[in-house]
Amino acid sequence: MTALIAIFWRDLRRAWGSGALWLPVLFFLLVASAFPFAVGPDAPLLRRAGGGMLWVAALLAALLPIDRLVRPDKDAGVLDQLAVRGFADEVIAAVKIAAHAIGFGLPLMIALFPASALLAQDTPRVELLATGIAIAIPALASLAVLSASLTANHKGGSAIGGLLVLPLAVPMLIFGAGMLDPSGRGAIKLLAATSLLLTMIGPFAAGAALRGLRE
Amino acid sequence: MSELLRLDSVACIRGDRLLFENLSLTLNRGDALWLRGPNGAGKSSLIRLVAGLLRPTAGTVARRERIALIDEASALDTELPLRRALDFWARVDTVDGHTVDRAMDEMALAPLAEVPVSMLSTGQRKRAAMVRVIASGAPIWLLDEPANGMDDAAQARLVAAIAKHRSNGGAVLLASHFALGIPDLAELDMGALT
Image (tube, each protein chain N blue to C red):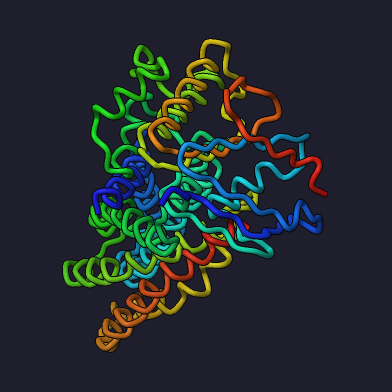
């Protein structure tokens, strides 16, 4: 167990090291501040469209560090060393997913509040956004680690990674943004179910992909 | 149980090329086996196969004890000072700081403890990887070209570490394209297998 905690902390340290902690925050705020320039400062319009925009931004923020999740560990031989020590690939994948969920999810939740303010979201909508994105974060992390594992052998893997993940993330996008619609109150349950499913599949799928890297 | 490692009629195919077949060997406590041969003879593949990183195409590999591995990658975080990078693996192997201290002394790396891994030379990184192997306490050592980039003094320390490990009941499988001057060493010429 101490070994798994050490691996978790190492991943978190590498995710937050050298200012990378602020990357999702900055990205989120950039999207939120650019959007009003693109659609105009009309507050009702921003309020209606802004929530969906934040969901898209959250999805992309999860994919930002795809290049740094698995490939450096593979190239440095860290994954081989862990495999030699008898850790199951699924366990390593699960630890990586947990570390990524905290690593990008925590700063994202904090950035959500100023970003919502920039997009004229009122308090009930901010609450819905925060709840929804918090539910989705484990699944987003799961998908990010999965596509990072699948593409760790390819140069320019992050571009392919984005393509791989996007179709799988679409249901969460629909239900998450659907929560914001006053007529879509059941959406939160569907979002939670989708998120749970993706989070559960993630370690096994990513573990299989990690095993494939060695062959 | 003195047998640590047994390979029974193992075959390995990489790409479309048969590297070796019908390879059987056993390593008992105190044994050391030198895999020699030209580049591409399958030395590293055999090491990875024994480590469990590759599946044999045929045959079985039985490991009775824990394994420590050195390969071409050092698996140390380059942004960290050497000592902290090694401490990560000490935590993964659940060994304490004194064990790492002793291993660092054995490889004469104590003066470099605070130097970032990215500043270390090839030979120094090999020595650092050797510290991880020594500190892990695993009875089976798989060393793939451990002396690459090492100077004479470091090679002597490596040979001494191997001798100490064997006298403590460990076994060593060593792949190297040049002789290291290890006494009482069995040889397997991988170039002559196919």
